Image 1 (tube, one colour):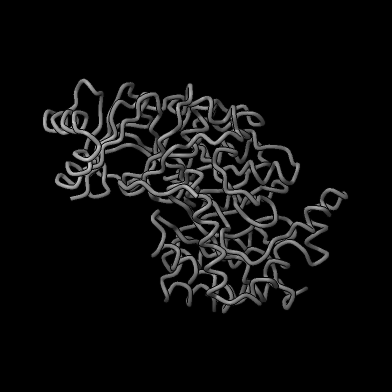
Image 2: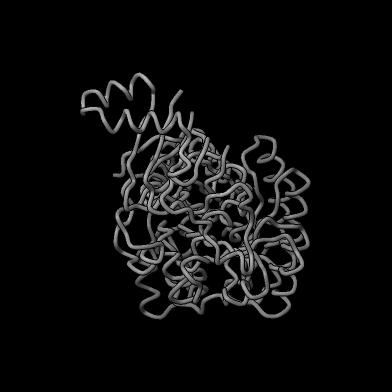
Length: 436
């Protein structure tokens, strides 16, 4: 058996047996245990609690480990197959759960970044052949192995920044062959990465050039050709649509979600980024696991979400990069709507996979407290991927995916010092990994 025991933890966050999707006042509670330990066996959490309640058999191991000289410690560790980490002065927390990324793409789009600086809007850049269509062209000309290699690099980048579970979308293919190529890469990542990966089919990300003036034809292709093939190869957990003016309408979204769900893919929706699109309501209609973006919402959207089981996922990194108005996050908390934060890591509107930065933006621009932002980045992010039984909290039976911080004053320090590296060790499945 592989065993890991972390002792003398200053604060163990999100620790408990009944930690589920949080909303309202629950968002203020980070379930902190001071002067704590956590114990993992074969990659799963086996026990945790206050140091004063450390079980006798674990206490004996700690005493033996503490009294041994360096050579004996190594021998002891090998004999007992146990690693002991003394986390005195440090916080231990569950890894971040990033429930919305476009991690698989070809090339970068810094020229469009300059276009934005010069005053062009997201819609104008798209109309000029940039945006998603530019990424689709680049991806079509990239081999599957090269695409995998580039995505793998980004995956380890986010792992090193504390992410311990991720959702990855297609959507830069916009044809059957290239969408399948993206989803096959996502599946390879799912099989080879040391973190859980969820996959989402987002063929309805934009209308490709070959269907210019015939969006209905492309919607039909998604429904009649793409969805059945994606489902037959079991490549996607979720179905998603960019429901936005100039992209896909409520009616398009309704048809696509309905078809995807008939093939076993639960709904997600890109909703209300550029304006009030109706995407929230159609997402709720199909019991979407989440509706994402939400920069533009009114009372109708609030009431629709309040009476649903759908999670409101906000992507403040994209809001920042596009210089838009932020989603009214506090209104969601005040109305007991569960809220998650994710990066939207992509080449066009958020070329960053830092969940620390999302926390900072949520606090600075959206006026969430660090505790609320932390919950949105951990347990609620896990729920927005259907991974709440695997990750997102320190709970017996879940995967031992942790962050051990440096000696920082408090949780508040993480979003406060938003460019300061705060991670000392990354633990995935009970094993320490190298931070590159």
